[in-house]
Amino acid sequence: MNTKTTATDAYLARAAAIHNKLTRLQQLAADHFGHNPDAIHWGHVGDLGRVDQALDDLLAIFDGQVK
Image (cartoon, rainbow, N blue to C red; front, top):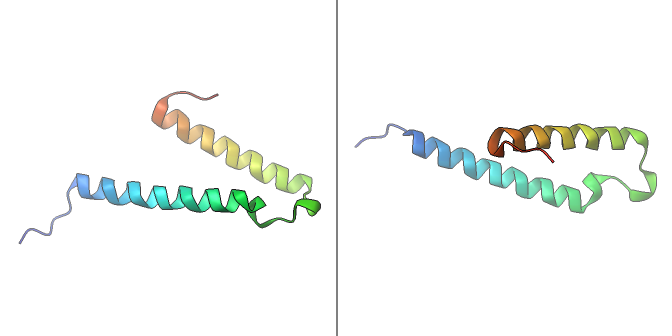
């Protein structure tokens, strides 16, 4: 039996992990990332700015475009 992992196997496993993380990120976003909407401060805004920039960086890697 060949138990050697192929690039396709590793790719599919990583893609599944990314999908799971994206789903979790969507759940967190729907819940204001665990923050009380009445207690949002500029630190939270800065955190989301860094997340937004990181997502732009990822999009630039995969589709070559940033809005």
